[in-house]
Length: 355
Image 1 (cartoon, rainbow, N blue to C red):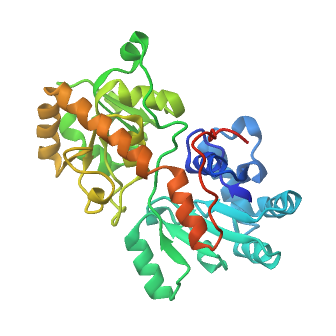
Image 2 (image 1 turned 90 degrees about the vertical axis):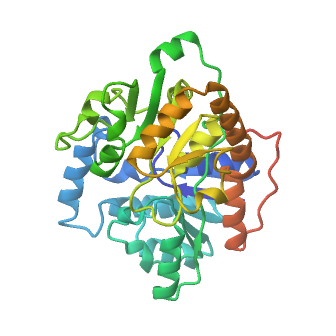
């Protein structure tokens, strides 16, 4: 089957994970990156302000900033004679583009692996999808009920076995990335407040990811590790830390974030805020450890820092579980079956990187 995946070409993002998963399953998968058509020169594409400026200008003349990516997307789908267009994050296409693809007989599916606060304008809800998938079951229940939309389904996030895997650390890696506690992501007020008990200077804490914003007047700035980590470097940063901390977004009501599965796949010892759905994916206390509130976070950190053997046992168990149950191949099998495309059986001997 020929599949066109639509979304940014981020090293270990969900879009690239879908490419790896589909190829491992035996499909021909191609990535279409709509950012190339927004009108921002390539040297400036790494700067968020450049996109913000382009969006401000474009929204005065067109409905969406990615308006100019729609024709190239349609052309690419025709050129490749694709059977399925899979849009990740859903914000990259207009409803009329999905309508045109469906008119050509192409199956269209969308996967929104994020909290509902990232919906943007939500115009994707107007498109005639074969299947629309969300990682948050609360969002699914709400939309299915209010919109009478039986094409909306729950699909949890997962990990990419190309990038999220146990790797051997060198002594230099341990010196560069070693920490008592490390995490990665964006540092908005809720997350900064939640981890505050760890930032009193008594622990070696590294906060990888985007620099905390200048308007966030918080001690998190003092613990920023200085860069965004992706791919193998993300693995090194989490594995070199004694505790890999995970904090879910406050708007992720009904499920767990992608980081939950990534840390599991890496074989990192994960301490995460407790969510009702977590025990559906990992066994709490044996494959992952949870905390409830700031005081418990501090206590759990102190408890497990003193127990390296127990940390390693839990981390090893998480890696086995993630590889068995929570890969992109597993999730895409469900997606393909749901939109009535028979999943191709995964081949253990086929590399996810193969094109």
